[in-house]
Amino acid sequence: GIQVEQSPPDLILQEGANSTLRCNFSDSVNNLQWFHQNPWGQLINLFYIPSGTKQNGRLSATTVATERYSLLYISSSQTTDSGVYFCAVMYNNNDMRFGAGTRLTVKP
Amino acid sequence: ETGVTQSPTHLIKTRGQQVTLRCSSQSGHNTVSWYQQALGQGPQFIFQYYREEENGRGNFPPRFSGLQFPNYSSELNVNALELDDSALYLCASSWGNRAGTEAFFGQGTRLTVV
Image (cartoon, rainbow over all chains, first blue to last red; front, side, top):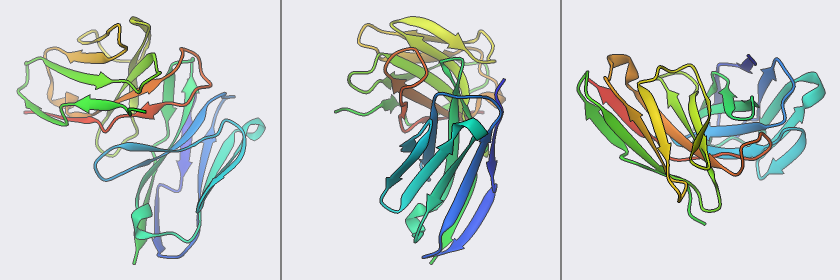
């Protein structure tokens, strides 16, 4: 089955810093999503981005499907950005495969 | 637009018991998927329901079963609970049974088996 690898596993930043999270996947996909899991466990949709580039405020994402990776950029990080970020790709039309996540801690 | 809602939010059960978790899909969505997330890991696919039929299953034993109702809400049933079933159970809704549509998740049900 498809493998999804996220890096780095942990990231500690000072408030105001920028960061890049990476997601590599082992096969072609037609569905890729980035999520932020809040401390209560809910997965918050950040981007639906099977290819191309999107921006939403301080966050942007780029997926290069031909090279099988996606990047999530967080600029001017805030303490509220802390949490776990997941990349997930669709496998077999119904099985969304998640990476192990990147745990981001933003310090004031 | 109503989001995905799950109930209950927390649950404590004893090993060997049975549990039912519930999920209401987002309005306009006809597909519900269930995921199990163990502590410190990413969610793992349990199964998906599309138009009241199971439409794919992950690597989970038959004691994990489900239902989808005509209004597209869904239940996850787990029989003969084991300690390892302790996890966050997440429900996602989407439209259609093909890749290429965005999935939206509920807030989860945290199950503790003692």
